Length: 178
Image (cartoon, rainbow, N blue to C red; front, top):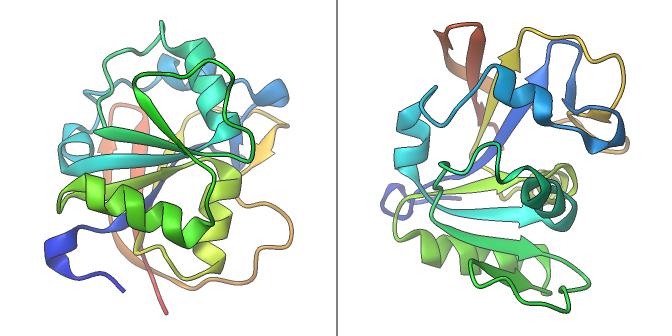
């Protein structure tokens, strides 16, 4: 799907060891106990834009004081309902997922497009728009919350590309087989 000169579409997920990407009530503060933007700086350097789901955007807004230094380039939020008050740092998109990925990839300027948010990632995976998945496994068991993959996602085969450890965080990288 992706030409090397146009960057990759990468689902980027932080996950507890028991498979949750957010805790009960969509809490994500547990992430910053283990990770900062300096944990894997090459990922941030390779990212030119981010496509984010509205729920993840709202959680991120609440947490922005905790981790203000992550810069993944231009930010696009896919939503059915743009907020009444615009955010000057974000472009809100109300189009279909294919168009949203195309718009964000152009803005990435040849670098990777990072996909954040369970629903947006699932839509991209279901439509064959994803090249790689990065999973940061943190040394915590949450017991409940938002699962890595929502119910109903069809089987997707992955090819392991590698793993790296930084402190207690293990990053797993997978190529999405088509």
